[in-house]
Length: 95
Image 1 (cartoon, rainbow, N blue to C red):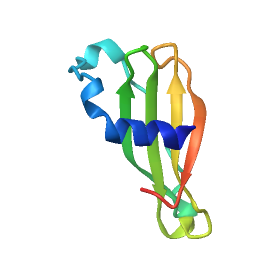
Image 2: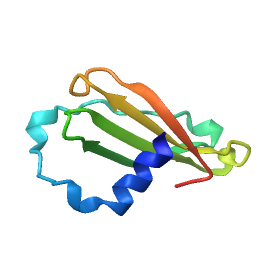
Image 3: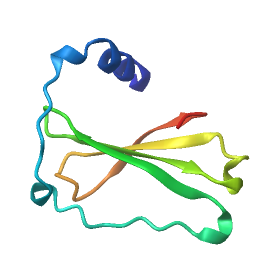
């Protein structure tokens, strides 16, 4: 299902409109820390608000400690304006 959504978003971008959301409306103030000795790091953060109001966020994992972990990207969603987040999917072998 998630891959179908990605394909749909890539093939039909003209169905979607984008607008700038001022930083003050989201109040994003949480910083994710990851243990440095593990040599696994978080990178490439992204976030988008769908027309339904749902927030979709993702980040990838990288570093020497990641070689044994093929789950490179985590995707999360929030239906309460970012107050709480749930794991939606992992994307393997991707950045």
